[in-house]
Amino acid sequence: MKYDLIIKGGNVVFHDGVRKADIGVKDEKISCIADSITEDAKEIIDANGQYVMPGMVDTHVHISEPGRTEWEGFETGSKAMAAGGTTSYVEMPLNALPATINKEALDLKLEAAVHQNYVDYAFYGGLVPENLDKLQELADAGVLAFKCFLSDITSDIPGDFTNVDDYTLYKGMQKLAEFDQILCIHAENASVTSGLSKEFAREGKNSGVEYAESRPIVTEVEAVSRAILFAKDTGCKLHLVHISTSEAIQTILKARAEGVDVTVESCPHYFAMTAEQVDEIGPRAKCQPPIRKAEDQAKLWDELLSGNIDWLTSDHSPCTEDLKQGNLWEAWGGISGVQNNVDLMFDLAVKQRGLAVEKFVDLIASNPAKRFNLPNKGEIAVSKDADIILVDPNQSYVVKREDLYYKNKHSAYEGRKIDCRVTKTIVRGNVVFDLEKGIVGNPIGKLMSAQK
Image (tube, rainbow, N blue to C red):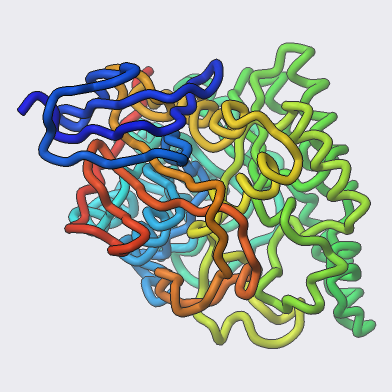
């Protein structure tokens, strides 16, 4: 047979628009795109009435294996990604133990990940105060980029991740510039957010709006500005993760216009929920930076629809259910969201607000693949990996706990109706998720490496 798989009659999303086409897949690659493919294949998928687009390239995922595997493992996490339309991801250097701050820790992750992933994967290295002399070995070992925190995440657990001081940030940027590596930064002012959080907790200010006010917009803007200032001086490539405010994005755009090599991501939860709604949802909606007030979210939407946000990520940061108990000061800060990235944002951005579908694909796939030097990912084109998802804009569903593939089945989106649905996820030509069958086959995910 000429093809292993043919996807017929779908509305295929290309970089310059949408058109009806057939896609032929051979040896895990897209080998033909035509108005009609008449040859036979081992498997034929009817995509009539659905969008056919590249799977999400999620560059911000926390899998807590090894060390905190009870929070999330590679198997359960990648199943959730497959069900949500993600076909490849980059895993953060925390919350596993030990954190990925040297080659030994990276080797533990590489060993744990083998034969467990349903989608393709890669890893970050971490930048912390004690590992400036370990950055080269992590770069040589193939991490896709590096990550550091300007916010306060001090831990007394041996091997856990910690935030950087300004000296470490500056020296780390100098070294990473030499290696031509991207530094991804969680940008919040540690001193101000830590002090305000303690003050608000003492005073019993526990509402969602008050939690947002304990991490005010200025703390994000200040940290972004400091990172940009250091990047200007060192020449380090910069990526600002999970940015939650228009003010910070405008700061980033100004720096880019001045020649700084900087990109920016945001996350579905900042568009799907407001601080005023957090009290009803509870600690499942706690994250850092916080869910912002409705007036600030409206400005963030303007940035997204104007093309000022480079891509979307999940910041999937799961934990056991007991850690989501108590008030907003006591609960773990992280949202389990990777299973609902694509259809939730398609509903909110494309269906409800009129974003062009090809721009949506840029946000979930094309732009992150380009920035992270993954030339085989992120696009429907001949010779690319056949990482393809089918999205039905006419189906609706309610997020239910029993349908979640996470190890710990809780989500800030439980009970939410989403008017769109991922119906199939295909990784390198292999169907790994089918809406009727669920997860299909065995884990086939492969380790990805950047191509400089």
